[in-house]
Length: 228
Ligand SMILES: [Fe+2]
Ligand SMILES: [Fe+2]
Image (cartoon, rainbow, N blue to C red):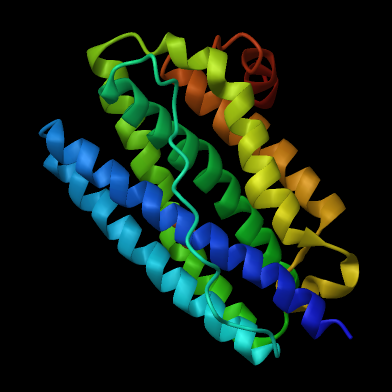
């Protein structure tokens, strides 16, 4: 019986969507307080998107025979070092949630979309993936604006922790064995490969471009790819 096991993993996804809605709602308030109304509006939209994703997850869980009742809302974990000013903690959250988690999520959803076959699962993955691309862009836009104003190199010390949190909460918890792929659960080995590739080709170059991390590690590969 694969459906009950897949439904249980979709319940993890449901919890993740609820937490993402909370983070984007918090970010919208921080951006508005800082006078960045464009980013505030985009974060508000992202929070609404995540609530929509949660509803779509509930429908998939029900279709797979699981319990679609949302889990009790856990207190939203505060992101970022508490010793830093509020604006820095907002930037930390935008990078951790947008640049790291949502960039990984986009790549994982596209990989999952290629192997899922259940029609409702496929339609749900399509709808969620469309939004997650915009959420990743929001993170990168927030980082670009902050980097244009000030040195953001302090974030570099936190990148490993951001990656570990994203992988533990949003990759390991929603990956599974090969038999579940058609029902929207990415096989663990494929999930690990997608994370490694996205980290090296999207996230590291993006963080390096804005001065969060040194760019030397990615430069040789980029030169090789360019044939130089
Ligand atoms: Fe989402
Ligand atoms: Fe998202």
